[in-house]
Figure 1 (cartoon, rainbow, N blue to C red):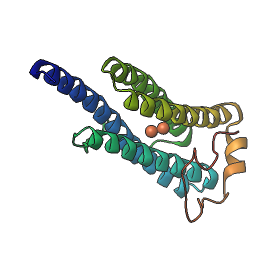
Figure 2 (tube, protein in one colour):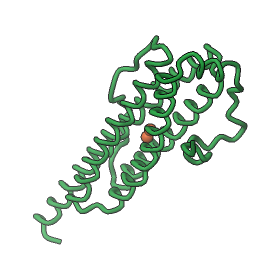
Figure 3 (cartoon, rainbow, N blue to C red):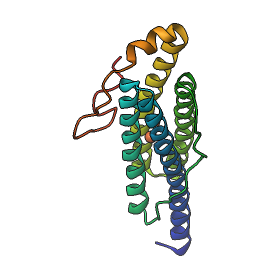
Figure 4 (cartoon, rainbow, N blue to C red):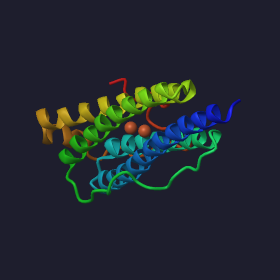
Length: 183
Ligand code: FE
Ligand code: FE
């Protein structure tokens, strides 16, 4: 390989590592934000909503790992930054509205970064983004679904959830792998 060809290849690889790390920062933010929401829902005794929030956070941990593994395969260093500041003290309607927006923004960003990976000729990273975007869509649908129930039914919906169990079982696979999103 000529020197010029190698430096072009390195530059394209660096660009892919950069977008993979931006995606990883969004995952690390989502993990922290959803765990805060999980604790809040659990404290308010909305067990089923708390359980699903925890399972979604576990999905995001898996995504953060998948991005880190690809970054390392490419010779990069997985970052530890969060893409945003974690919000505290939101009420229940706000939580689900807010998290639907988090997923929506994530899907849009990942679609753009998928295009970057395609432009840079990295099909493995394209496929990784594709697979993760599908899971973010499942999360979006879930948050949007809960949010619309709260808007339409309000307390009638929330009182049905109050006191439901919050256990995720011993070996939790997260929301998507546990078959979530089929509602
Ligand atoms: Fe994710
Ligand atoms: Fe997600």
